[in-house]
Length: 167
Length: 442
Image 1 (tube, each protein chain N blue to C red):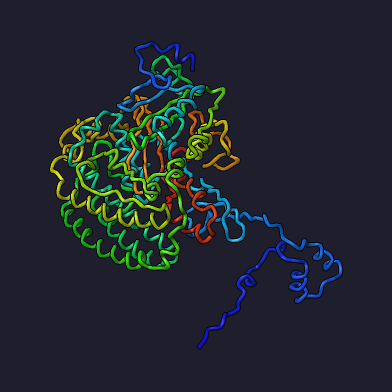
Image 2 (tube, each protein chain N blue to C red; image 1 turned 135 degrees about the vertical axis):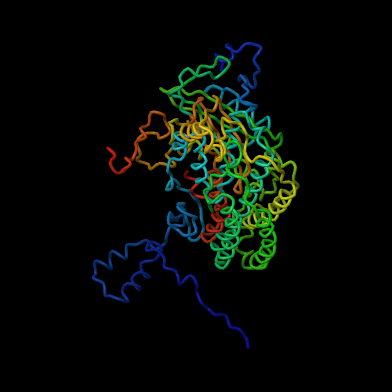
């Protein structure tokens, strides 16, 4: 939390200690792994009672992308969307996850509805969530190797057999 | 004539598991057929007399159970007939559609997302197109006619999806004739879709920039014909189901979920509304032109399966109300944006102009580039909030395309609804959640 807060200059808008980015009119908080849980807690107090969506992105091919406000980009990103039923607003929290330690605290205790989403993110990206009650694969078979939505996951292809083609 | 008590002991008809029987009972049963050797008799005698009270059984329901709407598998922990716990096991239909989406251009993406929730394909296309338009920055420039066509199709799709629910819900609970009626009415709606889009399902009609084609001649009469047929049919449903004591017994008080539970579990759509919370994205966070039409958000009060049934039935009526307003308000004009970047040239121009031919070729082979950025757009599908999150790296294909599938989340409410209920009610619960497994597994 502290190193992000130090790099943020005063002109940058912050919310709960996170720099705020405007992404096409949508409000995005750039949280760190350390303050992630406390930020989500603060958002719940603010009225964002529903964690509507949680997913991951593998930015393997875009290592030098701009996250905004001096936040160092990492390979993985977890994107969580929160909805306030009273304010009728959405807010997004993005967390950078390094490749060598792809873990994040689980939101299960705050939002039990993230159970399936966190399992899906684990299944597809190999990001594991600490404190999740059942950190297992959800869509792929249990004995599957690898995490399919990673960019370095081999996609493979089925050769198309046309007349006269080589494959 | 006085009715004497039948004196049947229903418990006696059950086949109890071996461990639940006393040695004497077991001996009697087996011994009545075959005389046992002394060692066998001794082995039977060692069975405990009393079955432990906390004995539970775990059974698998599905993945090929007819009432699981496809390939949903539920692991149920039972104590007798009572469901103690339930764990949905999914993934049997997983085909990696989000991964596929990364290799299809924004132009082709519609064919992919439309296959997710195959009962409401147009809503899937709509949310994908709206997210792409948001990234392109043209979400405010979509021609009025395109927007209203989208609304018309979206609402008709809600009707067809809820009619499918009526059919399957009836079938799951033993009202088998309801299945025929529901499918019959749904077919009427799908016939209109076929006239408009060329296909009954998986239309790929709503595309970034507008819709694929203008409405065909005579579409207004078709829709009016639908609106004239449906109310009488819905009234038949009321007679067939809503008022029936058996129907009410099967649904009322079954699969109850509270408002706090629904919010905590991120449930949306009819499940959230059945708890009495009035939340509908069409009204609360309007998109398209839903702020220009009048309709009511239907809410329940008990959060049970009957509320969810009634909500869907009445949402059909509300959708018909919206469709009528759309018919009155349908403006003239373009059905797609005249932005050369995303819209292919009209067919006629291709014969005359070399540039148009090249443009047409390039847009269909290479697609169009979408600026870097990320966006999350949500709309109200018949099952709840369907949303699309796209991260773009500036190329013609999405860098990451994620769909927030309402059924995927809503399935999490099943264990809470089933807890303490009967196995027979589990079927009612699955049915009332109305999951589409194509969307759950993607």
